[in-house]
Every structure is written in C-alpha cells, then in structure tokens.
Image (cartoon, rainbow, N blue to C red; front, side):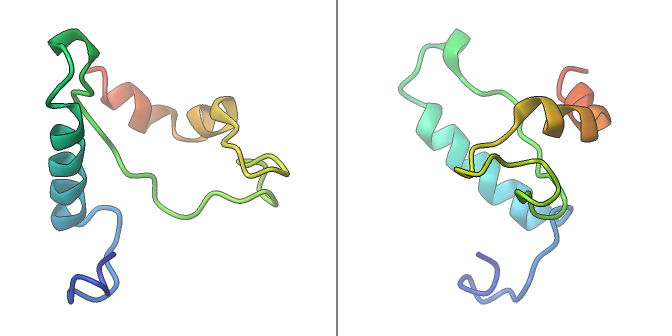
Length: 79
C-alpha cells in the first residue's frame, strides 16, 4: 500500500497506515447502526503465515493463536 501511494514501504506503527485504515473502516461502517460499528483498529506487525501457526492450510486466520500472541495489542483496544 505504501509503495502504491508513493510513500515507500511503511511500518505497521506508521501513523499514515493507521489513519488510512481508520478512514476506510469508518467509511465502510458509516451505514451501520452505532452498536454495529467498529470503534478501534490495530495493525499487527509482521505477516501471518501457515508456518508459524497463525494460518490454517486454507489460509484462514487462527484467531486464538493471533489473539494469544498479540494479547497486549488486543487488550489495548478495550481500554
């Protein structure tokens, strides 16, 4: 995304990445009722892969694995 936007490679902690993600989520959630909207988002550093156990062989996210590995990030969304 960063390269396509002319910004070069971006890190997950980059404010531009989070701002773009939040803007997109807000636009998608706009027609939803307030109780259905996504309020906070976070970007996980690194890639998820089948080799590290975060993805199934059909490339579905193993939510329990990701939630456990990034527990602090997930808990931060609820503070």
